[in-house]
Amino acid sequence: MSRTRRNRNIRASQFFFIFTGITILVWVLRGLGILTFISGGIIWILISLSVITGIWSQLQRN
Image 1 (cartoon, one colour):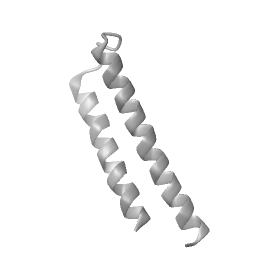
Image 2 (tube, one colour; image 1 turned 90 degrees about the vertical axis):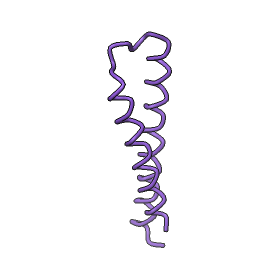
Image 3 (cartoon, rainbow, N blue to C red; image 1 turned 120 degrees about the vertical axis):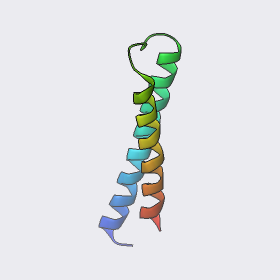
Image 4 (cartoon, rainbow, N blue to C red; image 1 turned 60 degrees about the vertical axis):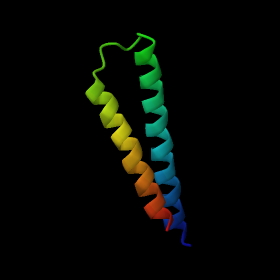
């Protein structure tokens, strides 16, 4: 595996974990009433980004 391909795999995995972490953080803070101004649509966008980057990460791996 070439070095650039390995870097793409790492980058895709990093994006997945970043989006998933932000999604969980926002969801928990909204549930606690701290981020009540964030609409449910934003949560769905973050969840979608997490799923898409997870799929992208797996496709980069193969």
